[in-house]
Length: 255
Image (cartoon, rainbow, N blue to C red):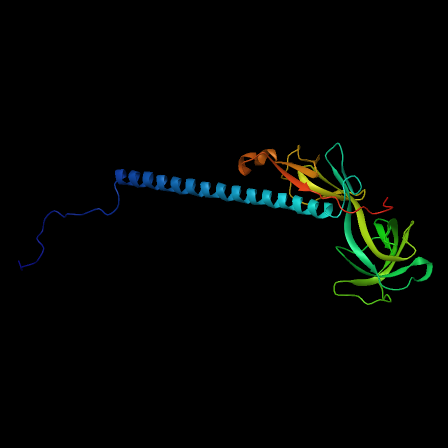
């Protein structure tokens, strides 16, 4: 027999793969690993959900504060805003100003340069008209026509013609425009109703049933209760915001 040749005899085979015991160990370890990964992902998911809910709540509270503070700043308690027994804030909200910029047209129609949050709406908006004598007088807007008025508009102004009913002023200089509305917490959301219209939501439904507006010394208190399902997530059930309203100058003849 040549050197190096294989000798005949019983073959020695090595089976590749796993034994049953090794397979069970691998399955257990894999299960533990997947369980740990799932637990980690679940914890991260809850953390992200809590963070998003807290952010949504902070944004909702910020919307409440900014909206109410903006509309209360130019007004006075009792005269321009009141709080009802149901915790609803009713107000006369400032929406813009018109500068008289020319001689009156026919039937008391005045050319004006308008600047504000939105365009005037006849039949819905109310006015305070400043006369050359320095007195403010109430009136109701009856007509607004955005057209080529006989005046020069400044940046940000829109020229048009304005007509109003009521006492007004025979020699107007400036017109301030307001709309009647109300803020409330209803069906979980912070809402605004324009005039006698429907309450439109300004935030998601994140507030509890005890959220409301209340009078406070020198201003307004806003109680904001978290919705029941959010109490554990946001970490607090109720928060409070106070808005101080400094008394401004009285305006004669305001209805």
